Structures are given as structure tokens and as C-alpha cells.
Length: 344
Image (cartoon, rainbow, N blue to C red; front, side, top):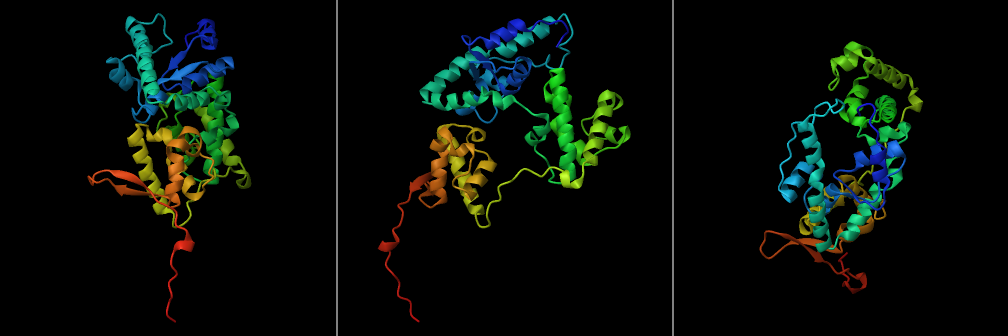
């Protein structure tokens, strides 16, 4: 932010519960407001989440949504200009306005779609998660758990944990998104190669010369050194992964087919309904604590997923031979099955 900016009017607006705040891909913005004020803006509406509920695909961008719903074209030429410089240019001002102006039209049209499809309850569940303060309380020591490690090596995880904690503290102190400090991919790259000097650090993808030679470069090297000094016995363990029991691979494949059918039928983004980890967990455990077995997701997908897993639901082609359909299967009572007399 430019020095001297008074954010109190903006923070007061975020805290005004009589005003609905409309965001697109709200999580990162909300996290910043939460870190600044200690409160989550309420009430709020996330057009990206609503679009996923309405079948616009996974993580649809604001530019795409503005084009499809508001018939507007967003000029992105000012995106990477220096927004801390004052005064802002006229082009920057117009870009900033366009970046929010079309949210109103998108909101109004998405609300109508959600109401028409009877999905207000679904959206309410998602908004409740977004407005839960616990979603945004990040302990620097646990920040590494949000990443997707490419290795389960204890040493790699030890360095990654130190780097993620350092980045989290930097982001909080400087009021910056953590990706502006260092991208996730760069963190994992550094953790994998654990550079010991500026020459090695400079060969890391995503690290610029200015960063290497500055205070941040030295801080990164010191952080890596701390991670390398952690005793082997104290290195972090990889997060528990669901191991799909041997022989259940075909069940996972069937559940993925069912997921695609449900998403196509109801116009819901697959990323919102269930992910691969959910599918694996359901295949391994009927009582898995995953989103796909709770709330509206269970109603739409989870119940039928369990039926398919246990043979109470089948999949077959429609009469046109081009589309799949679900086929209920009546459970078989063993007492009604004739016994077979086998010859000695």
C-alpha cells in the first residue's frame, strides 16, 4: 500500500453488516482484511463459488465471468503496474473500477440462477465456510501443511516447514499476500535443493538476482540452514494419506465416473463437489470425514457413491447408447438364492 493511506472507511464498510460485500475468489482478500482488523467481512457473496455452483466450471476467472454475464471486456494491461505510486494514472483508475464494477451484474444474475435451481442452501453452506474466522487463522508453524509437498522426505519437510513459517511471518508483518513474498513453487524448489550460498540460491527457479543479493536472500539462506540443522528424529512427518486398499482401484474409477455424471447432470463444478482425495477416502471408508459425505454434497453425490460402492447402484447406458445412467439394484437376500448341490 502507498504510505499514508487511511483504510478506516474501507474497514468500517467491511464491518457494516447492513451492506452485502460481493467478492470474486474472496478467500485471499478476506484473509488480508482478517489480518488487518481481526474480523471477517460480513455478509459476503463470492461470485466464483456461486459460478461453480451454477456450472461455470472449476475456479472460473473474473474476466470470464464478466464476459459471460455482463458482456464486458476487462483490460488487464494495468495489472502489473506499480499501485503504490501516487497519483494513480487515469488508466489505473479505470482498471480498478472495471475490476469491481461488473460484480454487481454478475451477483444479480448468479443469484437468480441459484434461486431458480433451488441451490440457495448449497451456497449458504459455502458462504458459512468463507465467513468462519478459523479459516483464516494461520499459525506460522503449521503453514507448511497448506502446501503440496512433492516429497515425503523428512529433511525436505523440515526445510519446507521453516521456509513456510518464515514466509507466513513476513506476509503478516508486511500485510502482503504470502504469494507476493515467495510463490509456493519457489518454496518447494528451495526446500528440495536447500542452497547453502547466494550462488546456489540464484540458480533456483523463481528467484531473481535482486532478491538473492538483498536482505531477503540472506533470510532465506538462514532459514534453510535452520531446517537442515533439525535432528532427523524431529523432522516433520508427511500428512496421513488415505491408502486405497488393494483391489479397490476399480471402485475409485467407478466413483470418478459417477462424479462426472453428477456434475454434468446438475451443472456443478467437480472441484466443488469432490476431489481425488475425497474419492479415495470414500473408497476406503464409508465414514470418511470428507466434504463429499456432508451437507449438500452428500445429498447430491455422497449417498449414491456409497450405494455404488456396495453394489446397490449400477451404471449402464441409456437406450441411445451414448449416455450413462444410474440403475438401482435391489439387494439380494441370501435366503432366497437356491443352494447348489455340488458333486463330490
